[in-house]
Length: 473
Image (cartoon, rainbow, N blue to C red):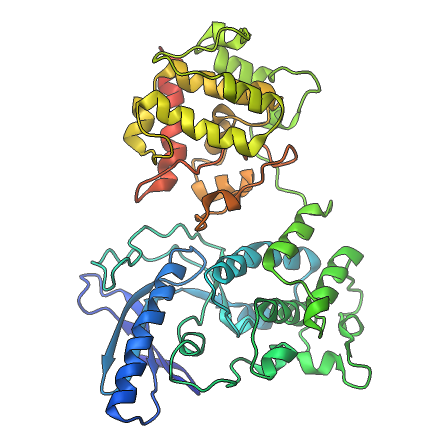
């Protein structure tokens, strides 16, 4: 075991799981407890066990390390977490130099959904800085061990090489919910800390402030305190950009608002920043290969040739889509879905799609669907649903559209999610991760709110295979 870090709340070690046949590496965090009487220590341990369950929930996210175990030994508390192999952004900055604007855009787009996720779980990180952000250089380790905690995440991580991971959960942040530290104790790195946090009050907006400071440090490689004008109480980060370097007004405005000393003048939530990013015309998605026709959204109420050829092979009469002939092999009624799509009530249509999928399978509505369910869908019903989506979205949405995108990225689910604008994880309220708007990315709808099972992400592969099977009927 090798010591790799130490702070005011304990030590961090790089260890090896001796019980695993492959001797996999892991991170061990030792949380030092102040001297307490037995009763107080018992209370602390009980509160710690309660709070650690929140870390189990966080580990479901591919950009947050898994919590593998926790235990108590000799009055100290321990956490065992997933080992992330890669370089921190601090190391990247030292090796490769300052970040350019496009790298900052990419960084914001990658980290903000993580902050959105943890804040929805009522957790504030409190120590966002380059040292606590790692870029993976290898796929996630599959520990494949029995759970140590009730409800512990056993799913295969969907993280991928090149993805950034937010680390240092579970020590100072976790202790704020226990008796281990006193109210008002300051946690974090002063240079990156929001003013209210220095006074012992941390908010979700405090993490956003630290994110802004991280961005300007990556742009300049100058210590944050050196860029703050204490006389005028403002940031002068633009003065420290490298010679010849510049930042667009749109990015500059976002960073300036992240860096506001007053909480009321700052972005309040990660969602607010993400909405601004989505609205910026200079943030362009990388085009999908081999599906160029999907980007051509016709003005007429018809489907694109590429999609017509796909669906037309299945059921020619569905392609014509006579208003009075919505085909079902089991008697499902599709008039409501047709109406909702025709008037572009996308959220309601998405819920109705879940409903009619259940109807076609003879399941109770709002039941989750598994891979076997996808295989058992009647082709007539699946393709009627798909054709309705394709028709009324003018070729932009539909299962067949998603199939083309999924296959164009070599069936890489993470890349597929990136292309259609989906998160690679599910929020507590599943529909909150989707945009029910006409301007949503191609293939964004129908959503996957109906997909269930331990490997829920296999729905894309299952649907693609099912459409292939239906095509040869």
